[in-house]
Length: 178
Image (tube, rainbow, N blue to C red; front, side):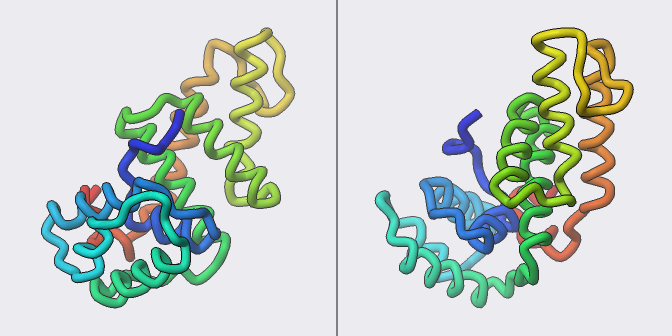
């Protein structure tokens, strides 16, 4: 469930920064993926040489530089940043890189950490419905959910989220172009 080895999307990296998440080693692998995908930036090349422990102020300055050099979009609000991070977790599930339990756990944690943000509250409810259904046949979080349909309900909600949050302004800046 640890995303430490999971490559971050460009949008996700900048959204996490907006939400004041600390830098981690995924920054360097993101820079590497960006360079391999053909993005050229002096800031990316500098970031490739960074090692832990990271100085948040230096990394923030470097990310600002990369944002200018690549003409990356700017995140305008906390809700936008939360939606971008949520979209990243869901994209990983849709692409088969993580299971629904891991994706929902991360989304529920994000919801809790961001004061139960309405935009992602459904995922909090789905997470706890699924957790309860693992332990028993009863849950009170999601209407009509039971052990026979919970995975289908989760997938349907994830697919609808991706349809509703395509992130078109970031599409050209993701190393995987999906």
